[in-house]
Amino acid sequence: MKRYLSFAFALLCGLTMSAEGYSFLNVAKVTGESEGNALSDFTKITFTGGQMHLLNGASEVKTYDLSSLSKMWLSTTSGIRNIQTTETDRPAEIYLMSGKRVNAGLNNLPKGVYIIKEGNVARKLIRR
Image 1 (tube, rainbow, N blue to C red):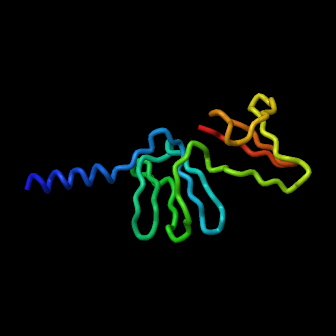
Image 2: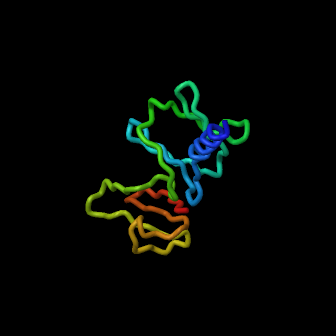
Image 3: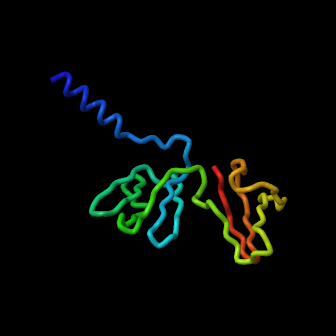
């Protein structure tokens, strides 16, 4: 009996997932869209009825139909991986919040908040 209890305890410990060092749960949808969810916004994830529920205590933060998702992953950024520009002759520009231009690629950016400018469109990037 003791052996079975030890096995059950080890199995339960092995099923626990740690998100230490990560800041976002990113999901990619089958439509090609992706979303980043800050881990600080929820405390629990449940899977019921073909859905994934992100909960903060008893409050539901977000719900996803599992059939609409193609991939989920933890990361230190909010899911922005590549920047695609519509103007081929003008590359995307990266700026600090102070307005200073950064001469580095997305993969080489230290933690911080950045503005990504693509032609007339500007987006905020949070790297944690």
